View 1 (tube, protein in one colour):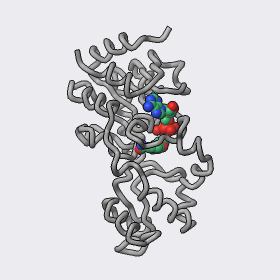
View 2 (cartoon, protein in one colour):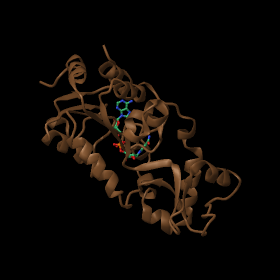
View 3 (cartoon, rainbow, N blue to C red):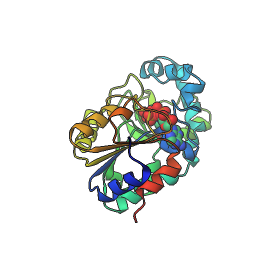
View 4 (cartoon, protein in one colour):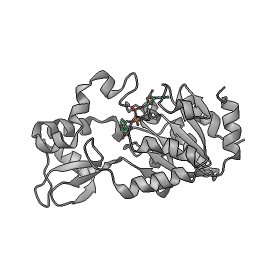
Length: 251
Ligand code: NAD
């Protein structure tokens, strides 16, 4: 039988090197939809997944225009951290959080109060922009102002190249050093806490069996089943906003 919430709370109280892996599900309570949940962007519109590939973005100006419209309209800019984000900050303040690996690109963990160096953003951030021509990097908000002022597909101000958010699209290479750092942290955990992720995106989903092989207890908090539920010591299914504060808060 899998462990209960009370047991997991005791495990967390005893743990010293917790590594959390967060996915889009931790931000749905902040008004940012996930991809694969019941109200997910791709569940509602399977064609949207196609538009998310790097190849389509670089090849097709209409895809880029649609992407810039979506960025301007994103709920991320006004979103606030929720009880789930704050629960992970509480773990850090208790001195228990070794690392927070996040697949999220919304910046809400940092906004909730984590030490930035403790957050490993494996899929980048939508708060930054990169040029595919000259490699220029800069903040997103000034480029969004250009879009709002009428530039449908704003080019790089330095070289005229294609600008894209500093996120990892499908078909785009991950940053090897960032993935290595995440996998290294996973292998150092005594408790691995997977929160709000369907664990379908690799290689980061592999952090779960990696942590398990290195001896960590595995706790999964998610509304829907994941492919790793069988190897978890605890699967807490339900609302993150309810479960996470209950297991992360100190006595
Ligand atoms: P996913 O959409 O594949 O899975 C999210 C999971 O969270 C689902 O299984 C869903 O049932 C669960 N969930 C949603 N809300 C929940 C809640 N309130 N309580 C409990 N469970 C809840 O997300 P993923 O695994 O992170 O993969 C999607 C990819 O898309 C990631 O790589 C990420 O980079 C990107 N993404 C990021 C954001 C963001 O930054 N907020 C949003 C959408 C997608």
